[in-house]
Length: 363
Image (cartoon, rainbow, N blue to C red; front, side, top):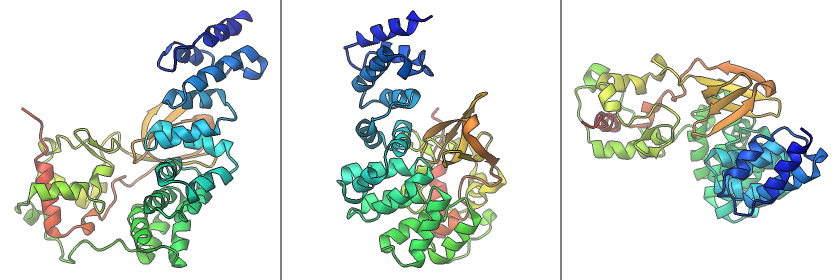
């Protein structure tokens, strides 16, 4: 038993073919939990494989599983490269633990948009309260894409959302920032924040103020599916931010590729006008908090005896040990925002439904 780590370390040190070879990665999986400080040869081997794996999701997993220190540059590279993916979010979470804040704040505040924008996205997706001051720093960046990413990230935690409200009260958001904050906070899961946001930051009016007729009348109307497809993808309605049609969109809510086969017009209208009426099985929302201050919100992707996997509205899956969870609560309301129809005119709603009816199973 004493020789086994040494043998594996020698085998790993012999690895020089590059990260595309999976053998050392698989070997490391069997070594998780071992004390690297007590095994210098093994530590050297792990660090060698980590270095050769830089720029890959496997690198992030090695840093996480073996708690490797001094990996700031590699983690920054991964957070930027894999922003919008689980590896990027994990890298950002590890960065928060390894950095004193000054390095990341500088990157976000004055860094090049090609790096700062995805970094802001990755940090925002962690749901970690420690990201809030960093995202606030990013609002000073000259690039609006960076600022938009920071605003979206702030809206993902209760503390960050309250900071957005403060900025709105103090009139420190420009017009574009107010629009982004309004759209994000209109979907906030905290009733008091959502209510205050509705007063301070009412979403930009897209509707024409015309009251919607009863569903019995709506189902008789016909629309333009091409216009409906544009509405589906628009920032105002943003259906594609939670649903996939074919390979396009985010894998969070139920896939809509064949929704026109599964639901008739009435059911489609009902799902938009009253999303809480029927929450699809397996898509119930959960709120989870951890000892590290992370706030996770989404659907329960999987659960084992000691681990939870939560998929958020960007499709990213975060795995947390149950021992680290301080709160876990099911949500009574649908993850799909209520009042979606208010962001559309009557004709736009009809066009959207017309488009959804065309999404049918191929014969």
